[in-house]
Amino acid sequence: MSTGPESADAEATGAELDETAAPSGRRALREASRRGGLAQAAGEEFSVAQTVGGPRGVVEAVLPGLLFVSWFTVTRDLQSSLIAALGAAALLVVARVVTRSSPMQAVSGLVGVGICAYAASRTGDAADFYVPGLLLNIGYAVLYAASTLRYPRVGRIPAWGPYPVIGLMVGPLTGEGLAWRQEPRRLRVYRQVTWLWVAMFLLRLAVQVPLYTAGAVGALGVARLVMGIPLFALTAWVTWMMLRRVPAATPAPQERSDAEAS
Picture (cartoon, rainbow, N blue to C red):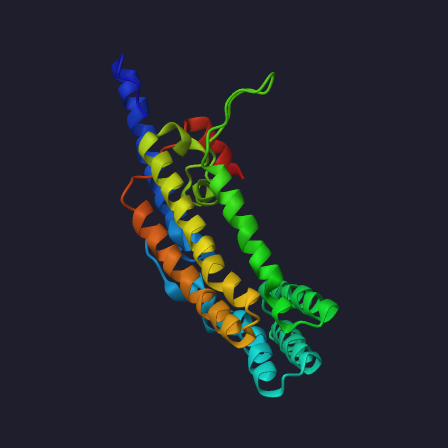
């Protein structure tokens, strides 16, 4: 941002910085467009396929849970249902290793299924397979909401915030760093989209918690699948639509140099 030209040299220097910043910003947006997950919200274009990790990512996210709820609905046998889910998650990791592609998503899925299986096997209640997911949504809702607030000075601790989570995640991808905190419109939209994600987490809880307390394992499993990838992709798309309406903030020259160096 320019503070006002005081000389011809200052104007020339500002123009040079703007010219170098624009390609850097566009490059960051193009790179974000090629990434998956929430990174798509920072891109020039939005791809649903990239957001969900492509067909393979969908299979890795859906198959273990689908097998669990399907097998349990048919057999009512918790042990074999857990084995089916864990086996599918393990095979997906093996498939990644065999094809020499990054196994991180499949490994994280296996760990998640393992935690869910442990929760259910410990109590013997199939509905408890979904408890870790419910707790995760509660934690995310609290964290995201808390990040949008400004906290007053307490003793020697100075006032701080807000640091909306979406801004912290997307800012580095757009080349903004934390410069958006100095731009009221950009800060406002980051707070708004962070609350959008809070709403998504709360919507999941509003639907799934009653099903859990009712012990409706089949309905809970279906709700978990429907409100998983599809709802995530929809929320990411709305986030992208909201962010693209407000220009990205331009970091100070030193911040931009540090970001490019990293």
